[in-house]
Structures are given as structure tokens and as C-alpha cells.
Length: 192
Image (tube, rainbow, N blue to C red; front, side, top):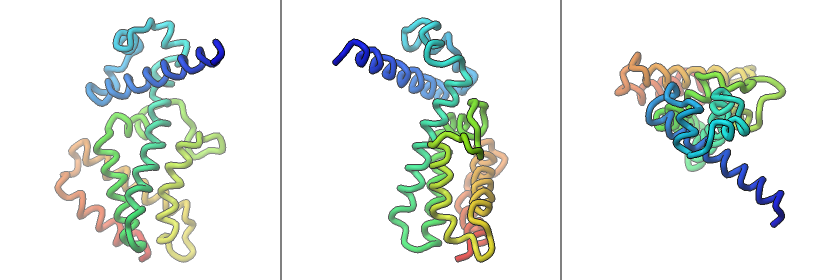
């Protein structure tokens, strides 16, 4: 291995460490606790080393969001893989999405609440974000209904899931009714 290849590998490993540490700190203490100073202390590198990878917290949030989008897409696809029939797939998709949001609140915030500097719903949207939307669309396109544009239907269904996830986590909706909300959402929006 050349010196250049070794340096590139070390740089990539440092970047992964920064993102993993930021994510861990955010999940434990919230995003307010994630500062370059605290990250530098935790990973035992200087702040200038962090800044050589990310210009600041915003870019770190963006990196966590991209990682989270990949994980969210995989979680939704895994949830729907074993489901038999459109209703079961849509229900599994909704549960998979809500489970991901509940298990990964800081990542979910990085994806959908915080400014990570990432463009959404544009031509230059990063691939992991496009793929997460595609994971929704793959299941929801088949239940959009005649004459309904599948992308718009997917946006509406996603917005409903996001509302359930966010309002439940902030205790504006009682969590014990989440399953009933999923059933109602599937029954009323999906054409089965």
C-alpha cells in the first residue's frame, strides 16, 4: 500500500470516527451537546483536525443525516420484504419508518429537523436521501390509486408518518395509540 493510499484510508477512518462520535453524543445528550470542542476531546484529536474534515457542526449533522438515510432506506426495505400483499407491505413500511424514528431520535432529527446543509427534493439531492424516498415510493406507488401521481401520494403519506413520529416523540400524541394511527392511515390513504 502506498503512503497516499494509507493517508486516504486514515482520513476516511477519522471521518467515520467523527461522525460516529457525533451521532453517539447526540443520541445520548442531544444535538446541543455536539460541539467541535467536545468531539475533539472525545476522539482525542485537535479541533483543527476536525475542521480539516468538516467545516463545522452543520456539515457533521449532514454526514449523520446521509448515514441515517441509508439506514432508514434499509430498515423500510427490510420491513416490507417479508410482507405479503399491498396492505401488509404498506403497514410494514409505516411501522418500519416509525420504529426507525423512535430508535434513532438524533439521526431522525439530523435527517428531518436540523439544518445539515443538504438539499432535499432537488436535482442535486444526495443519493442516500433520494434512495430513502425511493424506499417509500417502491411500496406506496402500488397503492396511490388511479389518477394519483405516486410521488405526490408518497409525499403525503411520508408527511403523515413524519407527523406521527414527531408528535409522538414530543408527547403531543399519546404513544399508546400509534398502532391505531398506522391502521387508520393505511385504511384511509392507501387504495387497497
